[in-house]
Amino acid sequence: MSAQALAGSTALVTGAGNGLGRAISRRLAGAGARVVLVGRGASRLDELAREVGDRARVAVCDVSSEREVAALATSLATEEVSILVNNAGIPGPVKGLTDIDASEWDEVFAVNVRGPFLLCRAFLPAMVSRGAGSIINIASVTGKRPLPGRTPYAASKMALIGLTATLAWEVGPLGILVNSLSPGPVEGPRMTRNFALEAERTGVSVADAERAFVSRSALRRMVTEDEVADAVIAILDMPGMCGADIDLSAGMVAR
Image 1 (cartoon, one colour):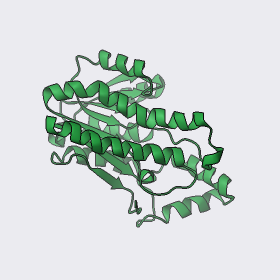
Image 2 (spheres, rainbow, N blue to C red):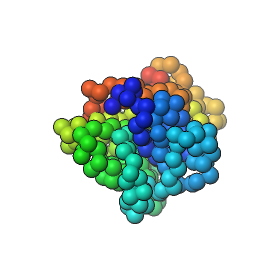
Image 3 (tube, helix red, strand yellow):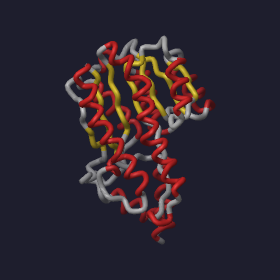
């Protein structure tokens, strides 16, 4: 689907209540799409819906729950969801692998990998029947480069990139575009939290932890939420793109 065709279309964005999901939802609504705002808490979704106006619909759902995702799909049976943005994700622990509890590992994979699987499984059949649709999975450059202390997150994002590439081959011939977008570090509370945990883990200052991280990028900065939202629109404007993983990292070397 091209960005020109966004007006009147319906996009579903997971993790819409915060950060990237919020920015992506705003951008899609601004381009004329109706947006289903999906998240685990109603208050921030309702706040965003009031800002977006009548183009927004709120749906509370834990994307890691098979039952809740099935209920979400049923509640949207009359909506033609033609764009699915799997943005919901959690950063997980910042510590060495041997210090990570199995429950922490499982929680990261439940949200970051199981969630996109469940959403794709729920909304693909209608896209296939129409012979059109676009799925964008929000991955991360951390899925393609070492980041000590973040093994669950890195492994989950690599899994999401693998899901994207394989699903593109499954449904591309049926008219469905499947791509992933891999941001580098994004300015905001999540990275502030990560820098603080990294500083605690390594014994450096928070400022030094941030400087060390952004020094790996050519632009020596993080990307912004709005830049990621703009990239989602750009992907939708490239109907020949399928099975791609796009880096948006201010020049951070991914491999």
